[in-house]
Image (cartoon, rainbow, N blue to C red; front, side, top):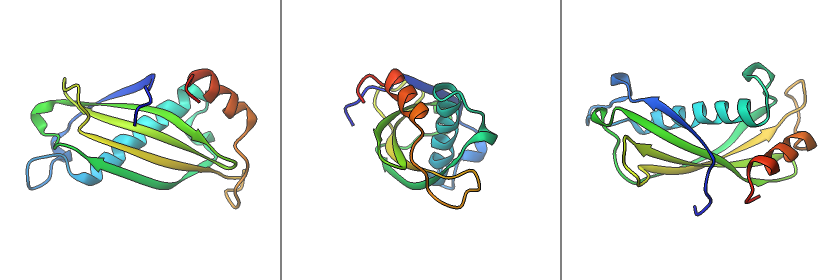
Length: 138
């Protein structure tokens, strides 16, 4: 993933994030990505969480090194990497503490739904415009 991301979120590594091997459990990374995704959409599209008309369709994570409690926090970089007809892809990099190499990288695909949440809809033109404004590489 060569694209630079202009948006990031820091989160505290909590004791409850740890597993029996004393590192952040792999399932917790999904929560880290979710929080970054919510904050990105709220900021870039200017939409509150209860207005989201999309669902997660796919998640892909590659783990590069464990995150441990002593790292104290993670920083998640996020950005739109692709916009399709009714979906868009977000790319992520998860950094542990002050490390400048990602502990994990990943992508998610979000599908836009109608107001009843029953069928897919095209990505609104307003969203496309905001993505293009915020993400120069698109």
